[in-house]
Length: 366
Image 1 (cartoon, rainbow, N blue to C red):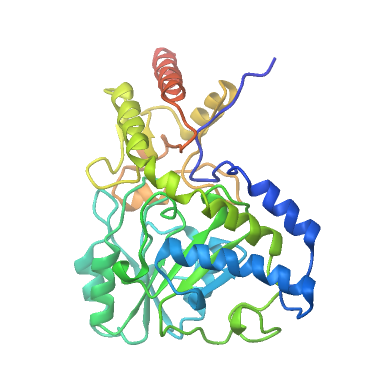
Image 2 (cartoon, helix red, strand yellow; image 1 turned 180 degrees about the vertical axis):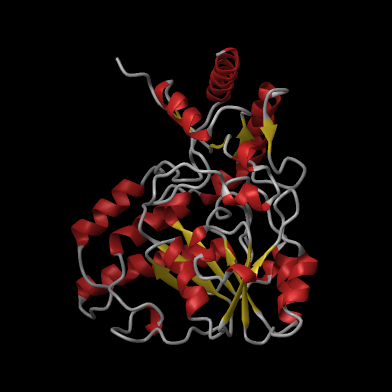
């Protein structure tokens, strides 16, 4: 009989929230094209606009600034390629969805906790700010480290640059206010908050426009052509209904994080431990035991964790995030990410900690 699974990989995809599947099914059954003017089309449009209003409320944005996309990756691409700026600066620990658009020489260094070097940003903007967009994530998907977005935005704006914030890991785990962050563009994704995969949004501050996006259709005010994913957007809206409850649970999740890290001491090495982090994220190394070995062993024991970021390659390798933080390659190759959420219990955390200690002892004795 298979062991029951304990899911500790929320940063990859959060379990679907109550009502999400029903909202998707209802949207599919209802049908209609949001661009049609008849009754069925108007009903579909209401679903889209209801979600848009909820997302605006959740991020302090205007509904007119929300562009629905196929997810965080597309939102990042749209921000960086349609910003009207030809130069892209990005933090070295950004998600590959951002760094793929950035020349290696334009990746900015971080400190040992994984936070952007603001002096390096200021220096990089000294000569060419007006033609630059800076991309800085709100919180790191692997370590949970929270970035100084507001400070970076002030530096970028002083130099005439725009700032894009990948908030895919921040939505639902941190309060978000677009104006307080100072971001010109913000990316989010539904499946990180218990919505469906395949839908997200790029959120634009007032006065920010996108260039070269009108070809092949006029949807989303001409900024993202293609018929909107009605079912996905309906599911996104249902997940947003749970956002307040999730934020109210953050103190409990932070206590679970501390409980886990205390239980793993002194054998474990915790990364980004000395900087503000997401309440639900632990990046931990088991020296001498590769991340791939750990992920497989924990899977067999009934625990779902990951090594670094989940991506399409399915490969496990030393985390570029940890390498950018100055972590030695052999140690970085032994790091896994544990991430949890509102549904996670203290008993599950304790059971995982016991399994971690057991694997560590077994491998050291081998």
